[in-house]
Length: 459
Ligand code: ATP
Image (tube, rainbow, N blue to C red; front, side):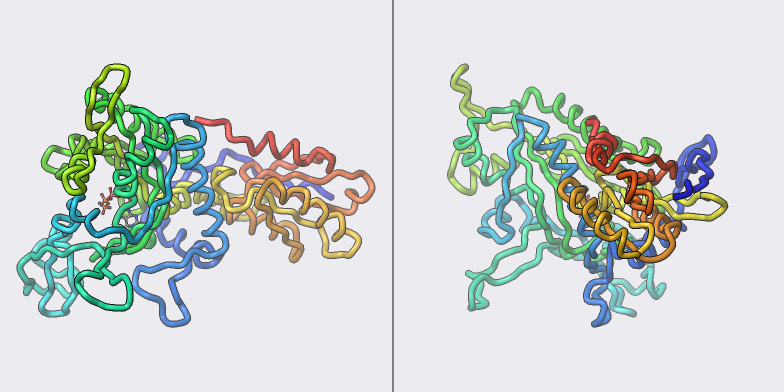
């Protein structure tokens, strides 16, 4: 096959002012929302029924993207460490958990209603004017609990009330003793969990940035109190490094320490890792020093002593907790925004998602040059061989150049093309997404060559 000419000038980086500070880029927002719908990352939920406001279903590519972000977090937070174990706790649990954690009493945002158009707003998000209709006729601010309430069992009575968890963290605190006893861990050690959380957000929006159900990736890291400040710094650095490792450039990230008056009731220190979203800097994740607040509260409410007894020193203490807490869907959105790029290849404009190879939905696309029956058996054999290692797409329709464009647009780092020469020389063409460079590789070496290119070099 003929080698495709490419203008392999260095890729223009998104959202950058030449030589200056990164700037928010409102147009990028529309570009990503359109791409997500058009290519099957994210759909409006139940679209055939008109959807539901700020509710989304993740499509075929989105499901793969989420899985890869989850996996990347898991790899760095659980797999590559010997001081973190995982759990998978129930979403519906004993409501006493939420009493002890303070969520029943304080998980509330002050709300105002507009008497004119009946919209409800977070008081801290608006001044004295309704953003929808411009009316000043607003109610007094009232607290609104963000937890979804439901009933367990057939009878809708007070005793049957339960809540959908608003965070995964409490699952780690209430299992502290179980984990200590079954894993023989000792502080400093962590419990990690990935799972769905629910919040009756009043002002969801900005696409999947803020939704009412979302997956969280949380770590509760239990440490001797005297070491808490050091571990807080450690996790701030470690989390920043994780974002860089998976391809978010430094200029789109910053660490913002909370002022004392901003701190939650349980926190001695909090920092947000912020991302430059198309509308400006916004919270991507938070790292908090939760002190001994949660374990102490659950000890008081449950009557069980949630503490660590150090047999070597005879010391008994309630560990402090450092919590890096991250939203999976919000992070997936940040990866898409950071990866979006447009450039010109062989005189033709293309959209390319420069996703990290392990974050991209597919790692490889297998493309027979033509749909002719002579090529199909070999192409499918190659597909089956590669599928044992990576998520692979298979596409045999349309001109090869258009198929490359389609793969560029969804971030597939490598295309493997089987052409008529392949039948004679047992070689395939491997084409790289970012440079569009192509090399011929013996089919027998494909797994080896792609493994080297797709290896995760680590932090
Ligand atoms: P925000 O200030 O944006 O409401 P928060 O400070 O209440 O967030 P945390 O309770 O610290 O958030 O939750 C940890 C992480 O979970 C956030 O940094 C974010 O990534 C994610 N998250 C929180 N609320 C939502 C939501 N409604 N939709 C999507 N992700 C969310």
